[in-house]
Structures are given as C-alpha cells and as structure tokens.
Length: 338
Picture (cartoon, rainbow, N blue to C red):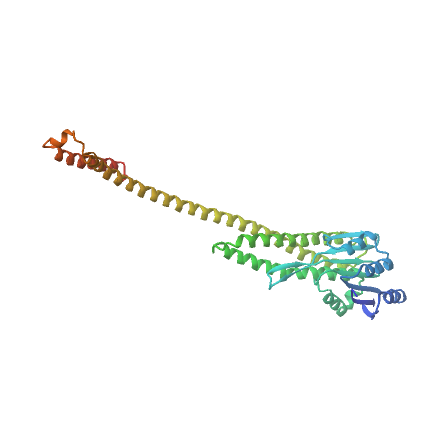
C-alpha cells in the first residue's frame, strides 16, 4: 500500500487514524474536520480513489500519476496543486539526489504524494501535531509546513555543493586531469538544483499575492514570507555556485592551454637543440669530407697523373687538404654552425 499516514484532524488535533481511504472519507464527512493523507509512490488506483472523493482536477491527477513534473503551482477553483523538487546530498557518493512531491490542497483536505525519500513529511506531521494552534489554521498551514521543510532540506545540499566547489578549487592547481570532468558533473547538479529552487520562489510569491484574496491567516502570511526569504537566499547561492563553476572551468581551460604552450615550447627548444647538433655534425662531416676528396683522387692510381712525377705534388696535396679544412671551419664558425 502507498498510504504512509492517514489521519483526520479536528481543531488542530488528531482525532482518528483510519485504516483505509474509504474510512478516512467517511470519518471526514462525520466530523467535518481536516483530512491529511500521506501517500508514498502510490498506485494509480489509490490516486484515482482520492481524486474521486475530493473531485481533484483530472490534469493535476494525471501529473501526479505520471510524475517527472517541473516545480509549479496551479489553482483549480478552491483547490491548489503544488509540485516541488526536494533534494538531499549523499555524502558517500558526493552527489545530489532529487525527489518529487505533489501536494493537493483543498478546503478540508491535504494529500501529499511523495515519489522519493525526501522530503521527510513525517517530520512535518510531527511538528504540526506538536503545535495544534498552527495546525488548526487549516490546510494552508500544512502547505506552509511542507514548503518550509523542503526549503530547510535544501540547506545541507548547499553545504555539500559548497564543499565540492572548495575541493575543485584545490584540484585546479594540483594538475589533476579528472578535475574537468568533475566540474562538468557538478555544474549539471547545480543547474538541476537551480531548476528545483528557483520555481519555489515563484510559488511562494504567488501564494503571498493570493493570501488576502483567499483569506489566508495573517500569521501564515508572515510564515510564508519567512520561507520566501530563505528560498531567495538559496536561489542566490545556487546562482553563485554556477558562476563559480563557470569561472573554474575557464581557469581550467587556461591552465590546460598554458600547459600545452609549455609543452610546445619545450618541444620547440628540443627541436632547436637537435637542429644545432645536426648543424655541428654536418659541419664536421663537411670539413672531414674535403681532405677525403683530395686523398681519394690521388689514390686512384692512374698511369698519367702529372702530380705523380712532380716533386711538390705531395706537399701541395697535403696543404690543399689542410687549407680546405680550415676554410670550411672558418665559414661554419662565422655562420655559427660550430
């Protein structure tokens, strides 16, 4: 069964604990109180049963069945339909888990449909049951308490994201190659957190605008304004997180570019050094090649070589080889090849 808790309240106090939806509806009609039905991942039949009893609008019912809705507030005559995206930070996995909560609010009933572990609706119920003077203010008091719980549960998420961003800032200058991927994944979480928190501001502002028109208790109006202030701060923090991550990504790109430039500079220096070595080797090879050329010609042993019978042929050949070597050395030295 998807029914987590099911109660009928009269004058802010719990008077009945029906064991089924049918019993809840019957008790509500008898005592003219306030029914609060808490559902957790209910079946379509359970949602339809509640919808038929309270004449819920079919579009809101379809949204509750399909789930995966964006945060919003919709009014159907005297009924409100609110979709919230609560969140919780998983320390072990260092990630944010988002849930979904649908709240139907009518003149004498509140139905909460939870599709994830958060928020802790049981804590909301305990809080309200401990303060009957707040609960007797009607269904709007339950809606306020649910909104307050969702916004309060965003605080640990903000702390977890802040810690992750601080770690990324440390990783940026440590040369960790995995930091780019972590920045990207954290940016996705921050964007999802923005999509969960920003609409809450609009929901609370809409409730505040309609408070006087629908006769909402003045104390509840003050409480809603307090929750609105908290949600505005959370939305601003989410915006600042996104900006910080964008800056971190730019810094990471700059550091990568600098590293690549340094690598290119080192490669260029290595290539230049290799080029200098090649020039030296080529210069000495040319210097050694000149006397080798003369010696090779004289070693061909042809019969008719005028220099063979010339007394100064040998010294001249030696002198030519030495002169060629020194000449090439001087040329290469002047061109800084040696």
